[in-house]
Every structure is written in C-alpha cells, then in structure tokens.
Image (cartoon, rainbow, N blue to C red):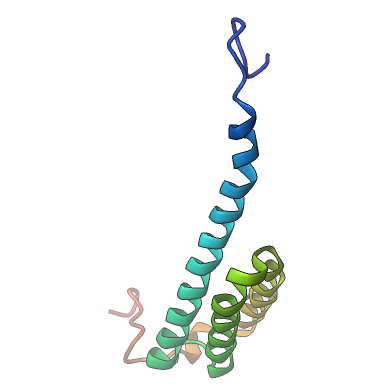
Length: 111
C-alpha cells in the first residue's frame, strides 16, 4: 500500500522542498529545550545536592554550549548531548540513594 490512494495528486515541489527546513527547525527547538532543561538541572543539583556537584557543573557547561552553538551549527550539537548522556549514565550508575540529603529525600517506606 502506498501513501497515495485512488489517484490522489502528490504534494507540490515547494511542499517537498519545505520539509528539510521544518526538520531542521524542530531539531533546533529540541536542542534549545534540552539546553534549558540542563541549566535548570544545574540549579536543582545545586539546591538539593542529590547528585554530585560535578554533574551539576557538567550540565551547566553542556547547556551553555548548546545555547551558544545550536543557532550556528545545529546538527553538530547532537554529540554534545550524547556526551552529557554518558555523564548522566555514570552518575546514576555510581550514585546510591543513601548518599542523598535526608532532609530533602523522604522514603515512603520509613515515613
């Protein structure tokens, strides 16, 4: 089965030329949203101390690099996000919940 049924007309050439620009815009918007999330993650790590400080600073640096680089070299910022993902994997692998500050994290079992 094809996308066109009953001899319907195909989209025009201008519509097909527009699709790569839409994809580029959506990717750029996603990277900016990730950058904002990483800066907010830094603020959360600083306030709660649930994760190590190095992870908060790595999130801040990654967020700033994404904010600065996405408008100029959009698709080439994806490896920066992947590097941050590796850092997030390391911190969640090496982090134990017992290290969290007791006045912020309350266990529902002990309450």
